[in-house]
Amino acid sequence: MTDRKPRKDAARNRQAVLAAADALFARGENPEAVTMASVAAAADVGKGTLFRAFGDRNGLLRALYEARMEPVREAVENGPPPLGPGTAPQQRVPALLDAVLCFKLDNRGLVLALEESGSSSPYQADHYEHWHGLLAAMLSRLPGPADSDFTAHALLAATRADLVEHLAGHEGVPRETMRAQLAAFTARVLNSAPARDASNEH
Image (tube, rainbow, N blue to C red):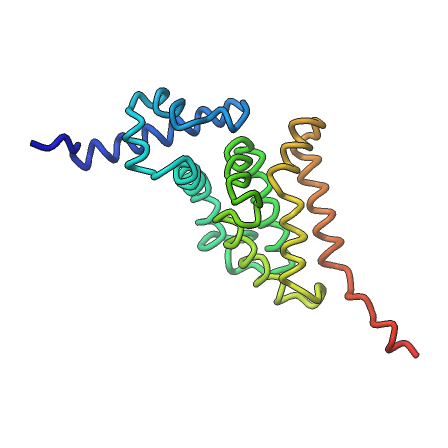
């Protein structure tokens, strides 16, 4: 006789775990306090259930991130302007960055924990490569930035979870102020011409 639960129960447990983890991060407490044990207790399941379903804490974080990010990803890949693929890069780049910022403001604890799990660097976190590649591809279609790869890194740095947490959590910068500041910064980057080579001026 096996103690393996039917697939329907496993799916229900998975959703309960994600909902419990989501609620714990939404409380705004220290992300490090959200452990596998605390999630298991909140979801009323055994720790073994979590490890079988997600592997480890990083696996749980990634699964929760993907579930929360899915509406944004769908809007970027298939949605209408300004996020959707039919939008000109000049409008789509700032829209994408605004969407990333808003997502991080809405999920501060989760994204902070996820970025801090990226082998001590947020640039090694699983989700970063996706957004960087998408943004760099948009920037490559614009005449302004000379190096789309570096420019994408620089723009995404303005939405880093630790910076968002510092501004929103420690300095109390209002959400709309942060969005306006990011939009203004992005506009300056996109509208700036590449620096001229001084050796060619004579």
